[in-house]
Image (cartoon, rainbow, N blue to C red; front, side, top):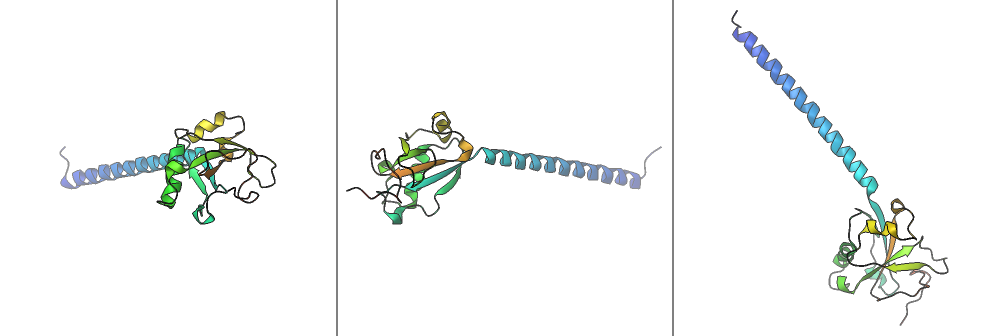
Length: 162
C-alpha cells in the first residue's frame, strides 16, 4: 500500500515535532548542567577583602573592597585592578600586597602579615600555616611601603608614619 499525501505529511510533522521536543530537552539539560557548573564554580571562588594601608590616602581607598575571585587569580591581577581605579596615582609597580594571617581586627595587639609575590595565586595561600580555609576568604592590605611593621594594626588603630 502506498501512503497518501496526508499520511506522509502527518508522519513528517510528527517526526519534526519529536525532533524539536528532543532538541528542547537536550537544550534544557545542557543549560541545567551549565548552571550547576556555574554554581559549583562560584562555590570555589574566594572572597577577597582589600584594605588600604595607613600610607594610602583615604580618597584612594577602594569604595568596594570585597571581591569574589577565582582561586587561580594572581596577585599581579589584584594590583592591576587597584591601580586601574586610580590611574596615575597608585602605580601597580609601587603597590605591595600583604596577606593577613588571621582575621584583621583593630583590637589585635599584633597581626602577622606576609608579603605576597607577583606570581602568587590565591589558591597558593592554602599552604600558609595561618590560613585555615580559603572559603572563609582572604584579607589583604595594600601599601606603597616595602614592608609593614610587625605590629601593624590597620588604618583604624594606626597612625601614619613619616
